[in-house]
Amino acid sequence: MEIYCTRPQCPRPQNHFVDLDDNATLRTAQQKYCTACGMPLILAGRYLPIKLLGRGGFGAAFLSRDRYTPGMRQCVVKQFLPAGNLSATQLKLAQDLFEREAVVLEEIGSQHEQIPNLFAFFPVIVPGLQPNQQDQFFYLVQEYIDGENLEEELTRKGKFSESEALFLLRSILPVLQFVHSKGIIHRDIKPSNIMRHRNGKLFLLDFGAVKQVTNSPSGSGNSSTGIYSLGFAPPEQMSGGKVFPSTDLYAMAVTVVLLLTGQKDVTELFDAYSNQLQWQDQVSVSSHFAQILDKMLRSAPNQRFQSATEVLEAFDSSAQSIPDTSLNYNQPQVISQPPPTPLPKPSTSSSTPVSQFSTLELLAGSAFSGFEAALISIAFLSVLKSPGVTFVISAIILGILIFAQTRRWIEKFDLVIIPAITLLIIFFVPLLRGELVIQQIVVISLAASLVTVAFTSLFRLIYKILSLIL
Image (tube, rainbow, N blue to C red):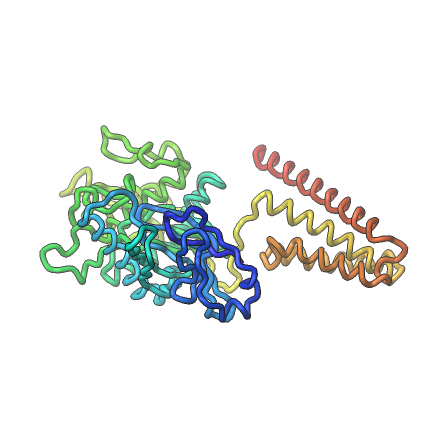
């Protein structure tokens, strides 16, 4: 098993321990140490980092396994690691933000299914790399969301459609409803902080910059600390002033605009002359939808929707009219709009949508299907001696395998392991080979695999061409 060293300066963080490949040994093994820097690898005696997920301004995140759970549960270990030369005040602020995330996740993570759960929060003190020096690291362990964030999704698939943007709003606005009801302002909503699980469900992440309004001392109750993401923060947050629920709604609208336009940098959409985002000429959306987004994007907090509930009600209204208070504060204009586009709601059934397959996954799946189909056909034909019956049985089994792939019950290493097991069974049971030798079976199966890949590529190309034409 490979364990990743979390010491930032470690010259060779990957460590492999053969004895830990056995789960029974892994559960009872003593502490392991990095072979390069001596850092303890099993954090808090139970969490084993196996992969670096990324580094940011305040730390690093590692995909880890919890060896004290029955299924060796995957989790995310976040390490507090501020970048750059920070002053004592800045360092204290950064540490407070990190600890604040743990406090908030403990309070609300278990109460809402679209917010990751907190599993642990602990410090680790170890000997430093220099003599007579100690290093102290802080770790936060939270639920692992298996998927990709919306920034990664935008890079992979391109800009979002109006229906996809509506689904995003329908999914995240109720989360903001819940968060705001707890007196909490997120303050850092952006595509990289919204994660889509492989089953399609959206999660709101990164509560390190939150502001707990109701628990703040009187006088500075909801003032901003200056922590924000450029382009997503409204004027009141950038100036260090008070923040409100509508502060998060502004950032949510900027997120939607960025995804609709496909822009990588939101500042490219900002027009200095009008002091507003200019985005509508780059997208094709209903006027009703655009009007709601524009109200969420207004500069003054009191001119925006005041709650996520108000935004949802605006979408639900069959003939929503939004007063343009930026034009006339005393006599607001009522702008009549045609009936809005029906808003897709997230599925509440137990059968959740499965994330889209990449081209590589489609080709790998077709190669697996062709190879496995050939092995199954050879085995049944050798036993039954009937091409017709063999075809029917093989088609049924292959259909089950393809369905399992579409549900992602079979993927990744399964695509190699299943054909390998089938080939071994045929090898050790001569009755299943008939008159063929194992080399011939492998060649036939590889040929079937290549033919399947070729047909899949051809049909995918035809589909793409027809999509562009139609």
